[in-house]
Image (cartoon, rainbow, N blue to C red; front, top):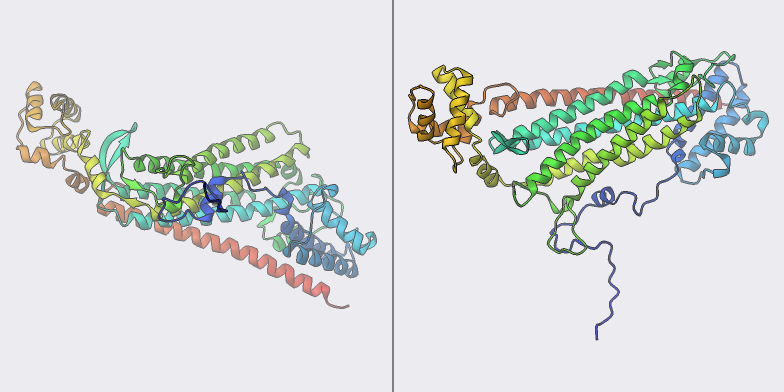
Length: 508
C-alpha cells in the first residue's frame, strides 16, 4: 500500500536542475496564465494626481479659483495620494475612469462648491492625454535603462571572448570564421541603437497636452508654460487639435521602438537557441534561465528565449493594432482612441522585462570554446580567406581567383579545407601557375590566422574589437547622461510643484 504524503508541488519540473529558475524568469515565461492584469487606470492614478495638482496650482496662480478653493482641492488630492500609496484608494467601476473617481471622491468629501472647480478649463480629453503621456515618458526611460544595461553586459562578456573562434553563418550555413566577441558586440551595437531610438520619442512627444481641453482650447486665461514646468515637459503642445485627434501616435512611436528592440532580442534568442542545441553544443544555458518538461525528465529547455520570440510577434501585432486605430480618425476627438491605452500598456507589461532577462541569459551561459573551434574546421569556412590572400599576394583578378577557388573546392570533395593538390589542379585549368607551398595554403585557411588577417574596421580582429567596444561604451555613456538629464527634469518639476503646493497650503 502506497504511503500517503502531502507534498506541495509548485511546478512540474526542475528537480534535476542544479539551480532553480529565478522567480522573475518563471513570471516572464508564465505570462498571464495565472496572473491577473490590473485595470489600466491603476497605472495612471499617480499621473492623474500629478496632473490634478499641477492644474489646481495653475488655476489659483491665474486667479481662476481662490486660495481657499485651491487649499481644499489640494488637501483632498494629497489625501487620495496617501490612500493610493497604501493601496486603499479603490477605483469604482461605476465611476467610469480614474479621472471621474478622483473628482467624485473630492466632491463627495469636500462638496461641489469648491471641489467642483477643479475641472475648470479642461476636459477629460486633455486629462487622458496628459496621464498617458506621463506614463509613456516613464516607460521610455525604463526601456532605455534596460537596453543600456543589456548592452553593457554584452560588451563585458565580449571582452572575455576576443580570441574565441566561432563559425560565422549566412543562410544558416557555415560562411567565414569570426570570434564570439564579434558576435556579442554585434548584438551590443543593435541594442545601443535601440536605446538611442527611444530617445527620439522625447524629441517628438515631450510636450504638454494639458490645456488642449476638448481639442479646441478654452476661453479661460490659463498658463500652459507653468503646467509644462510643473509636469516636466519641454513646452506646451503647439496645437490643441493635433494632439487630441492623434491619440495613437505617441503610443505607436513607442510601440515601433519596442518592436524593433524585440526583433533584435528575438534574433539574439534564436541564435543562442541554435548554438545551445546538442547538434552545435557551442553554449549551454544556465539552469536559472531554463525550464523543464512535465513528462521528459532529461529536458532543459530555452523557454525564456522562446518566450522572447513569442513576445516579439505579440509586439508586432500590437503595433499594427495601434496604427489601425489611428488610420481613420475624423478631425477632433474619437472615442476609439481609448483603446490605444490598453494596447500600449499590454505591450509595455509584456516586453519591458525582456532586456533584463536576456542580460541574465548572456551573463550566466557557459561557452564551449572547444566546440566552437571544432565547428571552425568544417564546411570550407577558410575558403574566402584563402581567396582573398591569393588576390592580394599574387595580383590575380578577383573574379578569376574565385573561379579557381570554386574549382578547388569541387576537387576537394569529402574534405573540409581546400587541399594543395586541388588548388594546383584548379590553377592549371585556368592556365595559371601556383607559386605557393602547401603549408601556406593550409595557413591561410587556419581559423586563428584568418582572424589575424582581418583588417577591416568593425571586424573580428582584436584591434577592431577594441575600437568597437570603445565606441559602444562611449555611446552608452552618452545614454546615461541623457537619462540623468531627463530624470532631473522630472525631479525638478516635482520639486517645483511641491514648493507651489506648500505656499498655497500655508495659512492666509
